[in-house]
Image (cartoon, rainbow, N blue to C red):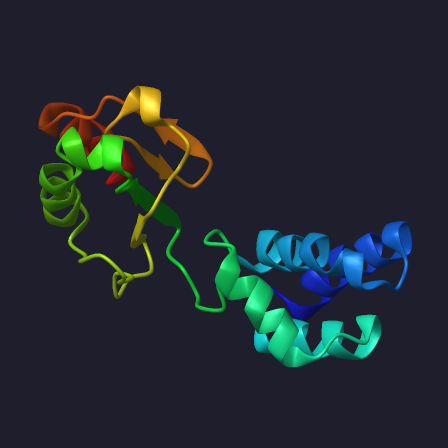
Length: 155
């Protein structure tokens, strides 16, 4: 995405919230929504416009697992590894997801189609094991269900 798009979205947030530290998280979310990740230029822009040190901005980005400074694939797969998911075979589901997506945890495919992340919790304990692909939630995963999900994504 272009610099103009993330900047316009961030400027909208700053206009709504003002040039205050409390606008940082909504600005980061806006930049990521526009670009798919938080570009370095956006961090510099926020540092200057919100008067927040870069180290604090990176601290927020690293604290919130849904924010990233790395380019991601078209489909961002977040597989939960909380205790309930782990007890319901999230390790086995990880193996299936890695096989179906062609990427290992923490990687993005060379064609930028898939990014796979193992996350500590998605808050879906009642649907364990669970994963999110972009904003869509999948729960009560089985090998067959994962294969069916990926057969649709590969089209």
